[in-house]
Length: 276
Image 1 (cartoon, rainbow, N blue to C red):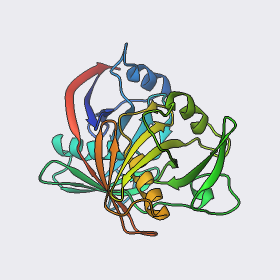
Image 2: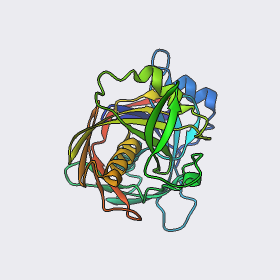
Image 3: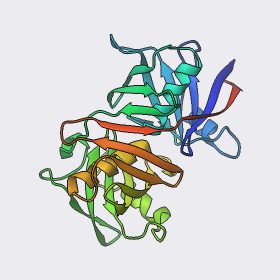
């Protein structure tokens, strides 16, 4: 059987996107790992899957699988690509699309200029909701990694994030530090680790080591988590431009209990078919 797919990216965070509304396929971690290989497969950070909704008043179900085959709760850059994909494939004519994920409901808005704004929902800070092992909620927590203490914020954007401030992103040994943060024992479901350098009150730089992937060119939920952590601590104010290696995202957040709004591009690279 030939399965149609689209290769897309959001600021270099790249995806294989498949429509399982009009097609059928049985996915497995082995198959996803095979497809994700950049030498022998298609190559991607995440696989995005469009499925029929399981709830009323929702347009689609959105599933995300990392390159290692693990299913995750949320992907912000992927959400923007998801919105462009379902429009391009004429699966919907709506410009405002309501989508269910395993991390909760989100709303995607395709703008006239091609940019996509995603209502990512309200961030969660209660340790059990992240999940993160701590006695009580705090703005930041001391986290020991490889014998050194880091002051980190812990945030759920539908998936778990920690954010640490650094003075020089370029000198950060992320390839060595990333796996230690990702697999830290205080994060029972692992964590996406973000490292942020403040530029000014409306601008910060960010690098993210994603669960099951490694460092990516961009991470939408990571940018949201970093902006939220920075706003809570008074380092930045909304709106915030979060500059990632692949380019900038615009993040707005009005404060606790309010949704995080993320705006950025979504680009189609090519169409293909693969034999399953």
